[in-house]
Length: 449
Image (tube, rainbow, N blue to C red; front, side):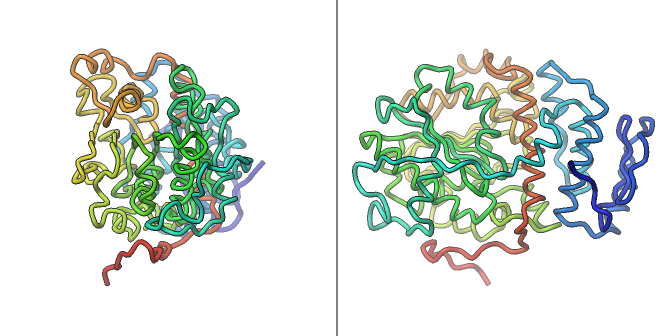
């Protein structure tokens, strides 16, 4: 297993139900439940040098200590979503406290050991079929150059054996940061798509070998190649793209700098969009440093500025954007997708669509993956030309739900638990940076002095 380091461990003193955390050398026996002493924690953190690696160790300790107390597992969706929807943390201290409360509330479905092993790169895929026309090194002259070789790009595409190669329009799933694609989507989108005959055989996904923690420009290469490759082995049919979190900006980057992709994408559905970065990235990276791909999603990064320049904040293909207004992990209103090209865009904030109703509750970054409006808008986008849209009549029954009927309390808890996996894999990543990677020359963006 693991144990806290004996030097420079994050000095935190918080008491949760049957748990008291102290620093480095010893962890005393559990104490009775008392108020969480936020001021004491803040004082400890402000006088202690912390590193991401120390926080990763402390995260595992918090999880293992509380799970040993067998917290009560909630089963009501309303309770789960309410307990998960905590106010946005404004410091690393608050984020640590919220983690403890999340585990204490019985929301976590991963063990500490599973979290510790969750950063392993997914296995490479073997995709021997070549596209009908060459797409590498470029599909057309206006495309940006790839920095990765074609074998690396192709091996990151996971194609199920049931894939029909064009009998139905393919769907490409693009992951976010710091968890495997399976961890992110197995209990939400994968389950919903697999149960619907319209989509069951024809969705594929990208397995980024670095879990999208390295340069976001390179992460975008996987998306650009996957779009043209899947189209090219499917009779040159159009594809649809569903992306979450960092995957939304990676997809928009690929559409911007690989124009050939626009010709074969019918729909882009962006979940928990980061078109103007993420406040969470800004909080963590400014305080501690972070992985390169996470750093590039600070709202004021050069990557985000280049993405949004020259109308990159407007859609290149029909785009359906869905997010929660209570989620600090998105760009919020500043990430609203514009439509200067007139291709068709809808921006859907769940609290605006369903105010004061279950589907408009305080959904988290991960919670959007099981919000009932998300699944309805995805189907709307996939089933007709243009972006997803819902009528007032369609909204009424959806607003009364917390999740699609096919998803149960375990699915909801497991989806929410991905946030803890991501936190650990962000903190545990060995190559932390305090400045972002240099922009590629093809971005043709001059960084302000």
